[in-house]
Length: 303
Image (cartoon, rainbow, N blue to C red; front, side, top):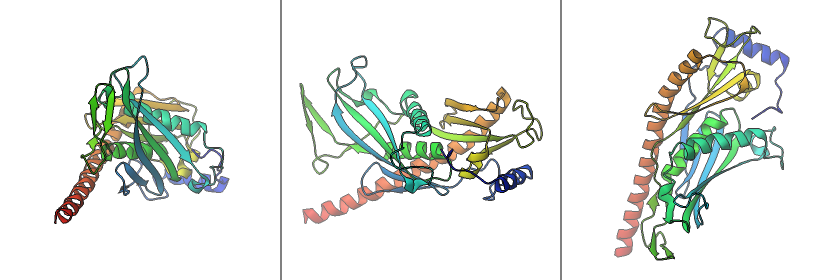
């Protein structure tokens, strides 16, 4: 996500030498995921996720539209990404459709829709005629590496937090009820996929595959921006708490054998379990606060 930024030769040598000595600049261990902070906006489905200094905002919206002709019993799900120079100097205004953003959109879309995380069939209103179209708008606010992982957390948290308006169907006529008239309805979330990205380094410039041999390679979980600039390979594993591997994405770089892949999956699962619990707890707490506030307002209005 930061190919236009350069690290000086002295700094890159310092970072790589530190990695050889089992040190990272931010003091984390090689297998440690940065702390995740989840903040909710005023509206349902409005979420800000902070992964270290990386910040990603996601907002969910929905509208009624026509389903695809070849999928008359399914609703629609879209992801759009947007970045501005505010996220970092590598993002130039008017050049927001780079390959990295397209890759992020595809990875998140596969994780959510193709894995069945979002109940697409539950978005169908009238088969072949009307359905809900759910859109996740992702905004990159600050870049310090890990955009894929942070974006996946933001999208899944926002989908869990979002509520769509309740509707009544009379034949072909659809009545959308305002929020103050009927309680909005949660989306059908069947599981929570979480992306965990590992970065690979070959500091000794050995022309060999990544085979887990001692001192032959370095594997970092959740690389920072400077670490991303120096890595020679990247692997994103998407899992859920049920130990299901949703997808594996490897964008070029050093070759990899099966054992290394398995090790990355095991490391990713421990992170996935913790992040999933954090997402569920955060959503539950915020929804409870909103319900309590609504109850207070209702009792005051009744008086």
